[in-house]
View 1 (cartoon, one colour):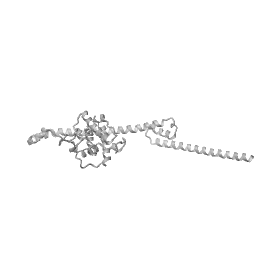
View 2 (tube, one colour):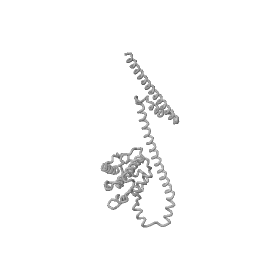
View 3 (tube, rainbow, N blue to C red):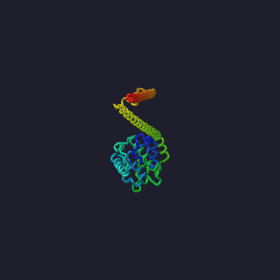
View 4 (cartoon, rainbow, N blue to C red):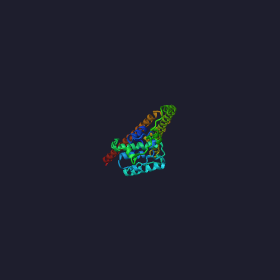
Length: 287
């Protein structure tokens, strides 16, 4: 099971829309933002679908709105992790805050994990709505439309055509503005997630370069040609392509000098050996 996945794994490059489609299709929900899964209930049900019977769904609260109720869901999820021997740490304090990037990363991991179990094949015998129900009555889930009782009562007595037309004319511009605001909010959220991902990737590669720099500063390695060549690239002040060429040229020259020196040393050793043999032969002749 893919419980430990590196941060540069392809799983963490799955987009928000793909994650939401994956959740909505399998659990028959209508989530529009990854933050709506911050309560932990969606994660519990995804594991319930992947491992039928392992998750005590009667303890999962899909109506959780405050952090205390959300934490109870994550406690259920942690118990399931323990049962399945999943070593993935649950950063509950960050997830319940509803921050987009934290929740997106966890859902990306969850998708990769579930796909590694069933190959991404949906369990056709699983009824997500029924599993969410309590006493035969489906609980409300964030992202699923819920009709207030007042509207249900009014539906039995529809208004006249004149009042309906008046309502449409009055509410039309407001609805259009609300839709525009919602679209802009989604676009802003997408841009924030993209920015956070880029910053995270930048920090990852910067830390790698810093590790290389520290290694190159080791006194025992400081004068090695390969280390000097790497430093030329690390400390270059511009993005000129010639920097790499200069480093390669230096390395080739250094290795060439070393090879010549080694050949000269070997030749000298051979010469010394031959001289010693001649001296020994001369001593034997004189004796």
